[in-house]
Length: 199
Length: 199
Image (tube, rainbow over all chains, first blue to last red; front, side, top):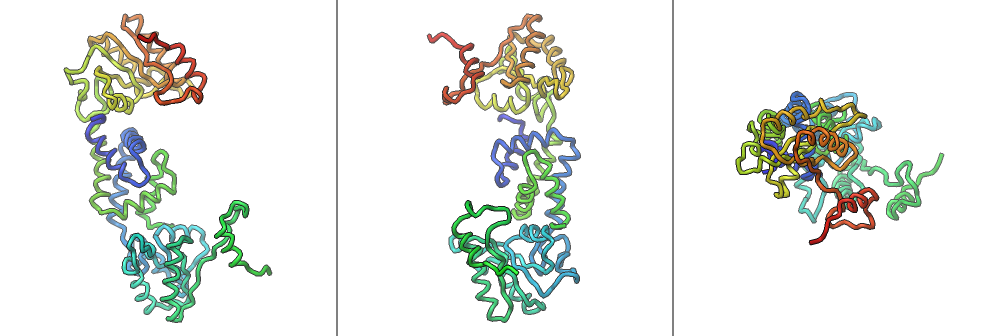
């Protein structure tokens, strides 16, 4: 054993985190042993508190410490405009922009035949259920612009359009600040397809 | 607030770790909320246990859960051969090779006039004290081959040689498996200086 047992154990646990290899785990463990004890303890307690006090909102399935979550409960948000996203982190990314005032629905994944993920593994049934109760008019499908995200968007559109919702998809195109020269063909094609009249 | 408060707090604490930016902290936090609760709790408890049960060995200042540490207590190690290293992680790296059977002394840093770190900030006084009591004959200085590590080695040598210890320095040279073509000038010069007769 190269480190004292409690240190070795801490390294082992840290190395299980995604993107953390054994070297980084060792660095983090030694850091946690060097800093003031309160700080190390604060991190440990933040993990336990987050686990204890966080759940999924029973309406939109976003991460929340209250149920329903702050967004679902907020009468100031536009409850006729619902955005479907893959993960809780997409809600955070969207909220950060400050340019969306509707409500959300978190799918918790995307359709993936290869990984064996079907609609029953996502919060699709829950989406249909809430749509039957809530005054939603437009549904923005904001899954990622990946093969799986596209397939999920298509699937949801085929499900929701017959129910007479306005179903929209976030735009694909060239990212702001990017360079056409370096953009991939598919993005350029999507940018052309999605072109708009300048007014 | 883009995440529920306990999640935001966890992200904030994770982002304080070295080499962990806000994006990685977010990824780690969401991972810790997804995995089974026991696993997240196990990490939190490993942090607390490591802090509670780990101290520095009162002899060699390595990280340990017993005092003196397992190496200092081991009569099977060669107590006449002492290796001075910068940090506890260097002890781990050395032990991993299995090619050193002596004992250690961890300085907890290197001399650095720029950062204002002098001998009184390192475990130098403690080294001299234990050398006056222990049967050490040879001292291997294994600080890193950096400017500061070299300066620290020189300083220690000037301190220890007059006390009639055999003071040695680990060899500098080309790393095994490397390519002379890509080695820096200083390493090549050190490799030449340190050349040995083939027998």
